[in-house]
Length: 110
Image (cartoon, rainbow, N blue to C red; front, top):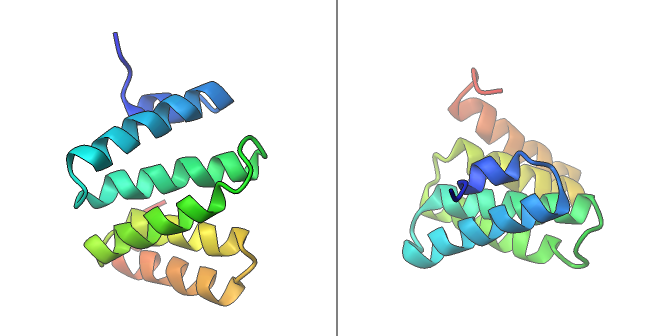
């Protein structure tokens, strides 16, 4: 049985993250205008960067997070992930701005 991208992402291992990334990448290939797939794909790259599993993974994270919010300007997940990317890139002002957008869109979202 094949597990979903989200199911694998929450495994928190290098292998699980890579498998989740593959699933989200397939979703982006199937529908390039599906914002959640871009956001989750970005999150896998952020996780790989934070864990030092893949060098230079933050660039594709930025690309996919930006794409997610371009596709859906009301994507809480997209703005949240973009904020994480900016934080990782040490751009605190942009990180706070994206986090504020995400909170404004859904104040009840954890």
